[in-house]
Length: 229
Image (tube, rainbow, N blue to C red; front, side, top):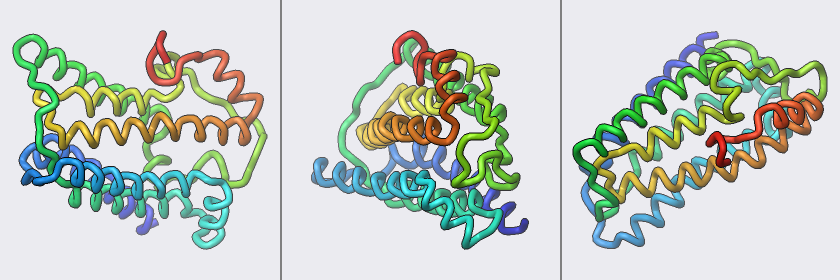
């Protein structure tokens, strides 16, 4: 259990490090002379981070990790993901340029949208069970186990969209009144990965619980933006 709780602590710390990095460090980073090269570095960096998530999402990999670390598959994922996020934020390079600069009512609207994104993310995570996400509580779905009496909640934001945590992420990373190109690259790349990963995630859920998830898809039509997508 010490391994699991330390992983949960690292998970929380890595999220705090991300928030500090994205909103404080990134705008103050030394700017690269070559914007294209800095952007390419950042894209490759995030792709390596995303590859870990994609790899651990595969049932075969999860089953193997569970065999090596019985009952701690989720904790192993949390440890690796947290350390990888810390490394990505630490190694991010400054890209010259300002994407936009909002002031007055527009700036306040963006701050409100960011606050809404934070609340949405926390609420959605709490409904799913934040302790399970952090690896301190056994998962309800065992790797490699298909079918069964799976159910998908429609409580709160899960009745509006199927991926409200992603919706919250989009709001948080794009609701920046003074958006530097350094931040914009992170926002665009991370959201693009989520949009692509969402497709494969839903395919896996259909395989794991075909009837239950298809019923959920019919009940909650939209993925991340109500009425649009």
